Length: 172
Image (cartoon, rainbow, N blue to C red; front, side, top):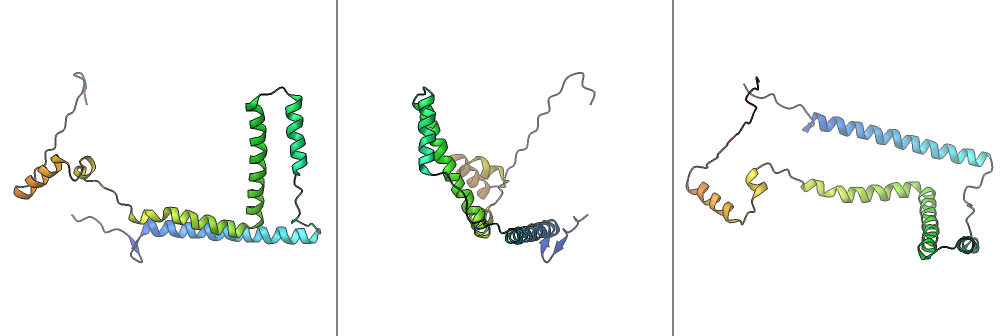
């Protein structure tokens, strides 16, 4: 009996086609929601006369007073002062990064898609190797060279062994 042929749509496997359609629907729905939400929030901000471009930030003098106040109040060592300084630097850096991403959401999404697409581009050359000879021996190893010589001069030899260990009182 011949195996049943696989389902194909436009010469693409049905499962792959279905996943592509589901992904496209997800992108369309998510994109539509994002565009609607951004438009609605901008409209609401304009209606309420809210200026979303100004964000209150902490000045460097405030940060220095926080650092010096913490270090004066506590008898801390080098690790504690380094920890406070590092926390403030990271806080400022991630705030600026978040503000930049929130200010330009479409550019952020495009850059993210380009980076992820570039990183996933190698999947095009991905192959699955199921031949045990290729998996377990190097092409230039002595065993592989001798096997190739044997296979080219004689009939290929396959030795399949199986060992089943069970208890003496096993009924199955």
